[in-house]
Image (spheres, rainbow, N blue to C red):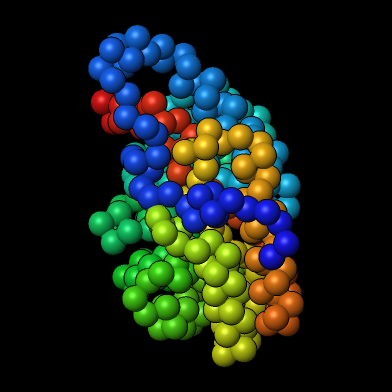
Length: 267
């Protein structure tokens, strides 16, 4: 890769709750909640501006803040949902169902069913149970991405490809602390190429979660460096594997968009 990416940025941070520096009680007492909206709105816009060659989706929790929620509705961007509360929040905020990305989990069976009934645009699955819930006659075909960090990715892909009314459209991975982002993207491209060879379907979407830069204030320079790194990793992987360039979706964590609000969101 030729783009300059500081080690402490492309080696991405850990869980969202650790992204914001701890604040003293006095600082908390003086905190103005209106600042949460200003910070979140600015960071939503910065991400969309920086990742010009990718789509950006945002966590449903950011819809709890009025200004970012209005911005998301106005721009028609996608929203990531992982439970029934998040689904309800997205629908009540006026997010078009086709813009909802449901990140399935085995305890969230009801959320998955309701998301399918509502017409959610995409589902990210990491277990056979989730595939079983989605497979079968429906009002429309379900568009599915497989989480490549799942235990048995190959079998999971096979289940999606064989599933009734399921379209295998791509792969997803959430970056964790210490991950090498460039290597993760290259590995995902290799997995997509393997899927196309084995199953004669071309997974056309690469989804990367927790693409965070909160420790550095989400500056436009830092985000532009990460965006360039993602673009080059995709390009290098596709050239090396002779694979067509996929559509890329990146998503920041809730903590990177509204760090001051993260601990209060379920109060």
